[in-house]
Length: 151
Length: 284
Length: 107
Image 1 (cartoon, rainbow over the protein chains, first blue to last red):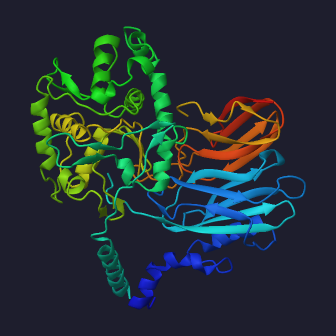
Image 2 (image 1 turned 120 degrees about the vertical axis):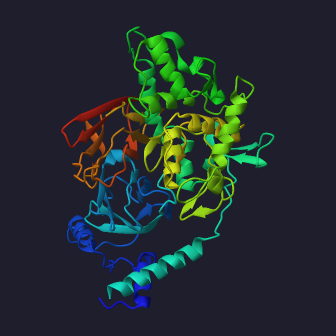
């Protein structure tokens, strides 16, 4: 482990840069494998594409215990144009799994909101699987602030 | 290269501190409306107050946290308020009574009441807050054991009772009994530096409100939203928060409802005169 | 579970309308990652599944992992074509099932 000071600073600042990496290269975190494995299992052979799904998450979370997140998938929600499910992952938590929403024609829209836990600053990843087998992905980095007071 | 890494880490930490030191942000200029009811989050300070204007802690929070308080359904603290309502209607003690047996529907009988607490308790010859008023009722009228601090539904019932005053402006009557002397004592507590960190309440909430302590945006330390739903710890009582603050200065922690903390509650409540009761507010 | 689940949906809607539903349930969502004062791991106990059905047909479901916050909150939509009753179900790790129902009138 021959880190120079510059490398070390780059490493500590790395979290801020991750969002720019794009979908093809997941950051080399300790649990990146688990995150990639979950993505692969959900995608079932498909390559996650950009578009159709949008993830809304705060840029800065005041407390990692309760972070509101929303997903919205463009879909007619009828016939073949149906979003079947959305999986949420967090690549810096002890376990990347957060939740999986399952929609139906009766959902009317493929949109959902919940509140999640983030152990530290990290990427929240949302994947949508459509009835035709295509998979879409969006990702947001959420900075988790450390309070001044443990109070 | 472990030592090198540690040094680098320290340098990075120092850089972060240098960046955040002196950073301040104004409280937001927004209106808090809960289910269509406008809250007073800015009020003209009472005479003798160090500020011109008193500001609710809501104005210091991030947008996502503020939003949680704006809708009584989205506010997780309302689950506790509903628990409090069940307790209100539950018979306990040897007298076979619930709160409702004497006080009927809290929406009528408790409306606006908590906005005027703490009050003078002529029997105990000290200020009384909602938690102690509940215990007094339990012992004297219900034949029930008083709640231990933060236990058995004390927070939830307190939140339910205070929630009946949602929107009402805070006002303590210092002319009752010896309230003025307790206010003076509370003021002493507020300005006395304690602990290894040598901090007073005023160090953070008077001299540095609006500044950041690490990543925390310091507010005026108002108490109009207690018991509050903290994203960190869930429903949190005022005396729990007082004790948490004192602990963080690394001082000996006074007991909940002790004379010092009752005096402090009296004084700090006065410092928020005119702000709406926001119980259960949502904070970080 | 300390208090009843909370449900928010409109009492009335027009046929074919997509309505918004909100649910909130009181639950610690013990993640299994925490330790008690003696350093022993606190076992995981979470709500692991939530279901919303309308007259027996599934509208929306969610599988929950320990990264969902305490007091799980969901907001989602439903397309209503006729009057009927929504049924909401939460399944706890310990096997407990919490249920709530709410009717809607569709004109």
